[in-house]
Image: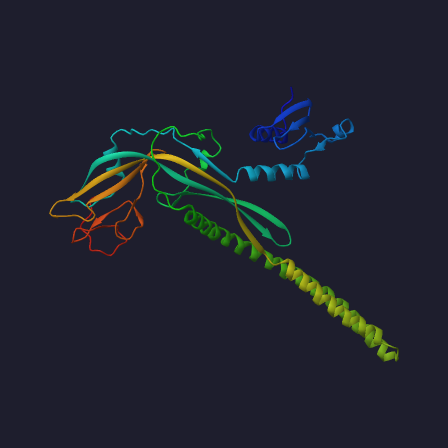
Length: 354
């Protein structure tokens, strides 16, 4: 049996995902029944097969049928939810590993009180950017956010093509609090806009450079035509011949040049459209570590308790939130009043532990 072509594999996977049926009539010819169809549809991948199956639709790259299937697939997959919970939730010597990941002042001690696993929601947004100019181009920009901290993460990129995602929850752990989806969407969109802005700047620079070359070439072309007409007008005037028709032609030439230059400039305008095409919510267990904070020579430390998180997917402690400025940090310092803060905060620090 010959190997399936990429389009055949795509069709069979789509039909299976949609809950339909596909029956191979002969090589590269199938009868397909989708749940929303009243009758089977015959689909051929080989143009020569249409001679024997005139009622079949041809599925090739660029065909209307392929565009329709892609649109259906995109509509089906706009929002999805998955779980990635095959992670190790009992790491060895967790307290020591946390201590290695964080930089704390010499007097400060963190005492672990409780460890609780919770599911952390990650939102993976796929934005489609369409560049409209002389040609139409499209690009897909994926971005993932950890919605507990509302931070962009990249460790899920390598997992998207694997088989670790499931559609059912393995553990009975509760979900951790999550940033509202609306805010996560706006933050993800803003991040994509920053990326696209640099791409747009590059494209506009290239377009303007190309426009300058085309405009200069066109101006030289019309300048040559005008010079030829001016010479003919001059000779006609010298001979006493009628030159009005030549003058009218020259005026028409000026209008044609202006119109052509305006058309070039209009085609060189770059318009950008941005839309969200897919969203996947991925829930991954994480260890939430409640700690009590104490410091030598300080009667009290503020805050007196910190919640840290250990990510078993990457096996490291997450950057914690600075109690003072709320920015992520892996280093804390101690002010003279016993207040914890990150190095970027202005409170007077105590000597940090190496």
